[in-house]
Length: 218
Ligand code: AMP
Image (cartoon, rainbow, N blue to C red; front, side):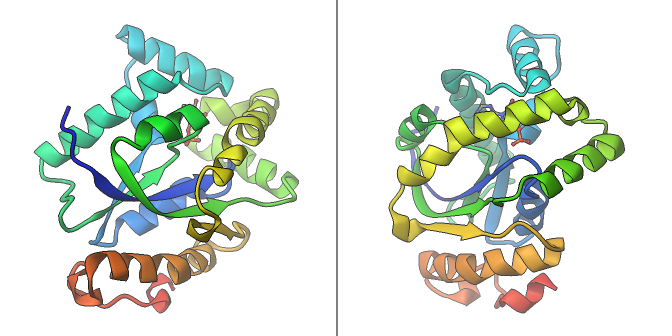
């Protein structure tokens, strides 16, 4: 494992908040490299002990153990650097779905400098539960097919992940309303994210070569 540090923006989101969609949209910007632990874990095959353990957790809406999560995450990060997908000198790391517990925050401190935390959360969860059910039908996601599992994921989020917002300085944390079209939510996020990235990279010109404004979200 390399021990270099990476500049990162954290994307938090309750289940069904559109975190995955936003992560993918943001990951299309040249100055950002998007890494989602949910996507990594879903891509693991069941033919190893780790793979079986992870799919079992996903099926039941439980979190994967912290040390295993960080180990797998770091392994993927290193692999993306080796293949040239992620250029840490030119790109900010957008971490989607990690950290999810205080222990993961502690473990990540050895690897990343957190520039900003974007949190997608709504007070009324019923419209979000409807979103999740629709997605389960379209994508065939096992963790959203069963209402008890959905409710458990909300409970795990409330208990384990919400307290993480207090782990970071309030100046870094931005609560974003996840309701609306993906373009509307993206625009809200970019209003906070662009200044951070421009500052981190020195100028808009270095941020992938093109000047980016929130209007690009539309
Ligand atoms: P997501 O797509 O981010 O909702 O993640 C789907 C599932 O993957 C979660 O319900 C967990 O079972 C697992 N998972 C994703 N990220 C983490 C993490 N950082 N720590 C533990 N489990 C995770």
